[in-house]
Amino acid sequence: GKPFSSFGGTGSINVTTLSGCSWTAASDVSWVSITSGSSGTGSGMVAYRVLANTGSNFRTGSITVAGSRFTVAQAGNISIPLECGQTVSGSINTAGEQNAYSFDGNSGETVTISIGTASPDLCAKFILIGPEGENLGGNSSCNGSSPSFVIPVAGKYLIQVYDASLIGSGSYLLNLQFTTGRCAKAFSCAVME
Image (cartoon, rainbow, N blue to C red; front, side):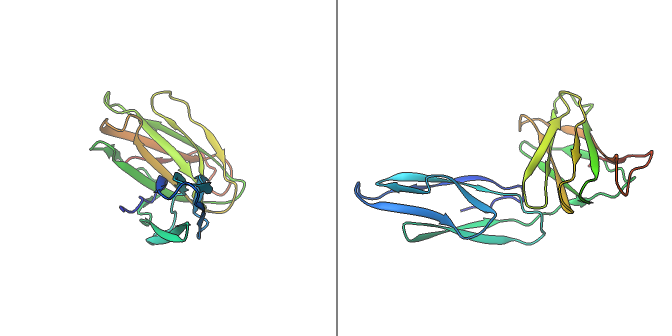
């Protein structure tokens, strides 16, 4: 199948077998987890989740179901690195397009992320993704608040930006501000693509 994007996602495997046959499903990598259907009898379905890939390398893992191996492939992360004080303009030009930004965070630092748009056809949304691919939360330009996040562990963090409806387009402004830690100053790290 088609490789997952660096942002991860969900997938499923249909199991077709005789009514009395039992089976199990297991992943061989930590970034792919079975969310339902880890075992069954007869036909069924295995659902799984792929975490975000914060590294730049393409990676593969597998899920074994009833002795058959299914490969899960995922693209590496190609993100625009952010440094304090940097401003970049951003836009979503096609339906479903996603942009990625990255920054290095240290444990205990607090960052505030805000996103806005002047385009009536775009409800820009961001999700903050941690070093292990975990979703730490997000917000959209449609509600105007700027959430703060305490960085749980040192590492590379991703900010995924996309249109909340997945069909809009336009330009946006993403602002990253360190409110505590090594970059806490009177300025903000602003991002636009």
